[in-house]
Length: 388
Length: 125
Image (tube, rainbow over all chains, first blue to last red; front, top):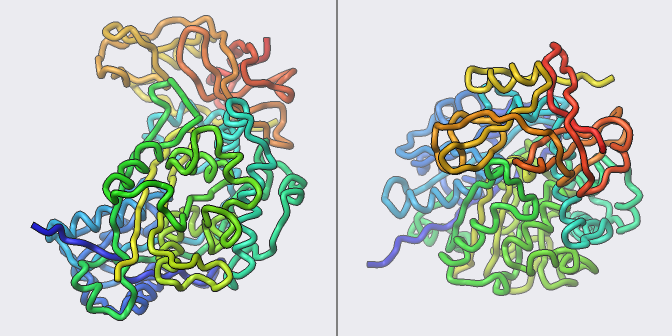
């Protein structure tokens, strides 16, 4: 029996980076409309809806009603910024099982308009079992990820200069993106001269805080082939969660060591086959650890791998985040997974900016980390292929 | 001086915080699998046994990792691995926090939070 295949048929990134004049529900609706228009589908075609914790109100209940959809499948899995990659994997399974045929995934929010910062605590829910043992000590996104960097430097000799190369590569790409929040190319020296937010992470080791959002539509391949867009098939998916291991904390690796191999095995490919990679870049250290954990280089050699422009399109061996990524372009509502999928789709369609488009890009990876790399995080990996 | 938020105490963790009020660091130990864990739970995260006992801990350990926030008054964010137990998310405070090194020896120092409940922080030495 032939396995049912599913494809990403629509992808849309909201151009806004500060949406003071819009509501969260409205942003979700705008990206839904954008993805439908991109696909050449209409609202009535949607029979599956996926969203995560950024959705307003009660998630699928609020948004399905707001959009006035008629769906037969919903999923509101929330594993932070990696949710949307997991949603695409779940949508493929639902389509294979005949539970839906056109699945809409939306992400949107306005943390910038609401004055959120990266150095304040988040997620204050008193039922969260770890909270009493962590919140008194002032954990923030940055000082927690910084501890991953401190340990990586200690274990493997990774340097601040090597981490800086990740930002340099992202900025090289961002200069061609008219929507990028930080479109200026920067140097290693500029990254190192930017002030510490939480040592050893400098300001330029950190992603932007932006409003906005994005959406993708996953559909049965028969539907994909009836549309006018290039066919981008989802050929591999993996997801995992890693926490503090009951107190046996190990900051040297992420849950990508599980989600990556699962996605590669399903796709029947190896990391060296990948022509373009979208890698979650909440911080430079996030990228470095994920590259190792996904198998693009051996553990501990991420620093050497990213140095000297190896991630720059047209220069290095592994072009990454050619939209400028979260470090320079956009990190809508502090959840960068959606934009990772969208840029991978652009690359596979040949629709990235000509200055950063990877030639003959027919195999791409998109990977996300959600939550907090130093305490508990989700991880989801997709392998995407352009089909003729 | 920064505000140290007070812990939310619930029935599962009441005994830990009662001991903390007497500046005693208790670490959960599983009678079935013989392993400690962190943060404290009623069910062992290694084997799911409910035979978990809080045992007094000497409160000495070593820095597993840390981060220093510029302008933050007098503390480093840290993971501390107890000499005979699990690794805790905590702060290293006092003299030496700004020149911390991985592997450095630290010992517990209970520090009052906003409502007076002491929370386990660490000092160098």
